[in-house]
Length: 319
Length: 319
Image (cartoon, rainbow over all chains, first blue to last red; front, side, top):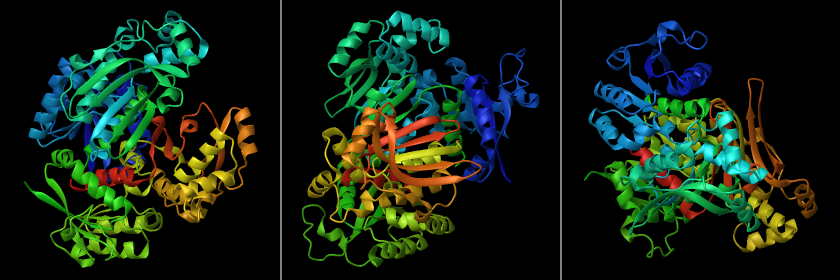
């Protein structure tokens, strides 16, 4: 059987998930692709880390050229994070005629257009489903399934940390600071939670989604941003009495007159499908002139949901 | 600019929607495809019907060969319904090397495997996103986006008529017979509502979805079916008191031990995302071993949502 050879750049949480699921679901993927898809090299940075439990030693390399300039490799998966180095690696991979899959939100928010053009010039594709809301295939849905629609609006709960905090505040009547501390202790919020709680992470994701949905270049700086750090338990309590819940929404709207993109807390009627999206779950609500209202719901992050997105891209990249 | 020529078989509700949205969103679709996609022939049966408002007369034909055996046509869209005649037309189209898109649930539930094989033999594709839950791109999601997952479970609200009836019974405390009559008057239920209310329509859709999700042939006869005609307003009232709503679910589950497919009324906790799917909306909840839990929500039927699915397939078929 023919083998498609894959090089992976990075072996953190997502990389480990990709390696594991590719192994666990090998039978299914082989049948779908009609060929074996095999990871043959993995680039890591830290020589000291013990990976014996997860990955055979002979796959590990410390030299990027072993993957990026390796003629045997057909597809490169970038799951290392960071912007500049990832940009350099992906550029090299595309110029060496490899299909490229990335899970790198920060990179895609800044350089998607440039990298997609480079891919096109090289007759290859750039896939980045995992860069926004891992467990929700929203990018391919917007690009392909809804390709016949004029998209008027997208509204997303695209940050798990803030949705977890708001859900806890709502269900348990607790204060913001109190729940934030708990989220940090549980690893749902980072030690510096600014990017999440101030809406910056959601704004980057909105820039990516809006660019695709409205087919017009939207950057992080175009997005009006307001986070959840000023929401109090009494705001939530008043909203509840009026029949609403408070969610941090990333909202994009588009008409012939103007395109608007903003992230801020919103009062949503309890009957709206977005109101039932709780904890670390994400959802993206879309309005198109043919499909009407549609919503896509799933886990926004995590080892396996993100791996699911990378593997979906991997199957697509083999075509 | 190069033109991709499309022939459409049928000009009922869905066909009219496809023609209209292709016209209204021509700029978007042309940009996505990189070529103009043009409907050049439409097969209709009734010579007397006045279509002057919607479609130019010169596109209309009464001879199937004008489309199926027309060398100029690249893609055939089948939106006529029925099984035997549609089967004959699609077979001819595939043998004449055309890409084929169909919205025909009854046909696909019976003959998907056979037609997909015929497409494969001819080096063409068969697309049928519109055959299940028009406004929800669930077929391509299962086939492509979730291709790296072992799917353990699907649970769908896939029949709009029964969901409308159950929603009304729940929200307004009314009897089944009373709401059914109203649904018939509003055109949400057919004059013979058996296929909807007894779960047969949902079972056909489950056969299609289960075949794809579990990669094993499932037919209508494999599905255990129980409809909603015996649900009373007191059933709904008791469920409500216990914190549940009653929904007609199409459930497929798959493990190495066995595959199960069934359609019947289910008590769902109000906190479950499927509980908030109301009126004529559809939703499909999926559990995969990588993605975890995901849900896809939208309109299940109607002129424009179904047209959206056909146009998504049309863009895919041009690749």
